[in-house]
Amino acid sequence: MGRITSQKVLVSALSGIGLLCVSVPSFAADTPPRSGTPAATRKPTADQANIAKLQERLNDLDRQLVARDAHIAELQKQADDMERRLNALGVPNTAASQATTGKVAATVAQAPSGPGQQQPSAASAGQASKPPSGPGSFSVDVEAAQRALERNLTQVGALLLPPGQIDFEPGLVYTRREVSSPSYYLLGANLVLAPQQAKRDEITGNLDLKVGLPWDSQLEFGLPYTFVHQSLLTDLGSAGRFNESANASGLGDFSVGVAKTLTRERGWRPDLIGRLNYIVGNGDRINNGIVLPAGNPAAQVQLVALKRQDPLAFVGSLSYQKAFEKDQIKRGDQAGFSVGTVLAASPQTSLQFSFSQTFEQKLEINGSKVPGSEQTIGMFNVGASSILGKNVMFNTVLSMGLSNDAPKYAIQFTLPIRFNY
Image (cartoon, rainbow, N blue to C red; front, top):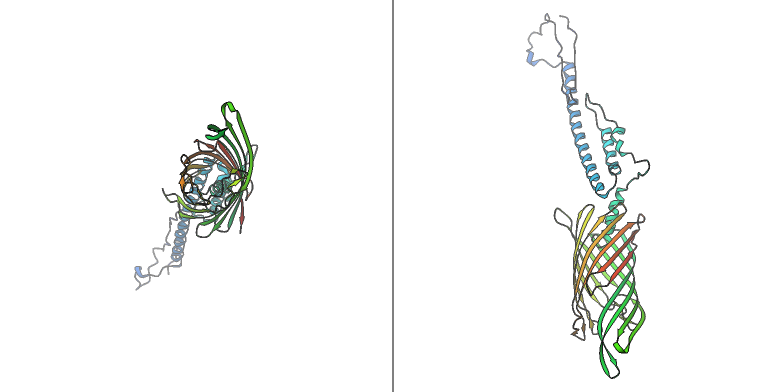
């Protein structure tokens, strides 16, 4: 048999996509093929079988590289979105991309390298994940930024607690009321109509409890206690000016309610929460001759809408309260609405601004409506919430009256504490 020349096999990957160049073994011109065996039906040599296996391996590596590139692109998209959100909060984007760049580094480190391609190092891919250092630098807890906003939304009733969590919310409210109205007085044998100015300071302590339940629902309980200092200044003209002051206190009305998430935010559609409360009316109505804001049984239904555009959340609500008679006295039914926004100002702090208005019908005594007793109460509210600890938040709201029937102003302090059960 003729002599077989040297066999050469060249396998080359061009641009990382596995293009294969092969030099087929050549035979000397003086070596004839086996007689009786057509060239098309010859069995492949061992070198040709190895080349086919290499080609299959290169194709498999190419598919893995395509999948890796798609995964890295998705992680980069998540990093860009996180940076956009935290830039809106005014925080450095280095901390924002820390977690995501770490994932990219891990993905690059684990992905296979194609022929002819240099494997990126995990250190270079995760370089941006190093925490900031130096004077004036700080790291940002991304989870805390979301938690501050969501805790505030839960406190105002626009979000419900997940199952297994409880919010205990002790609070204190100071309210200043000043009302001027004419009153009749018996001066000697004459009935005199004289102007009277009532000044009233109310301090109300609240104990509220919210319990997260399955099926996107929540139980709510509330119990207030009120202290009142009231002074009445009456101007009787030539008869002089008379001032009367007194103090009173009493237990407020216990309330119990349930809230349920009706729809979830999707596209233009907001979150919708339905809420039903019942006010028992067990509180003290009068103490030491002073009327207290209690002793009025009622049922209330409310619908709350929430639309989020981080770092902003827009909140609106509609409510109606049906009053019930007790001791021949029935307060007027109430209809109200509110609109507002909550802003995540920093990772631990959020701000809120809202306007609310309530329309109250006339008071009824012994089935007869009292003329001029209807009220329109408009309030502008501004507040701030701050995370004090993992499960503790401090919230304060300043409310300013915008109508004659509204309180002059009120300030509220709340300390929501979260537990798991």
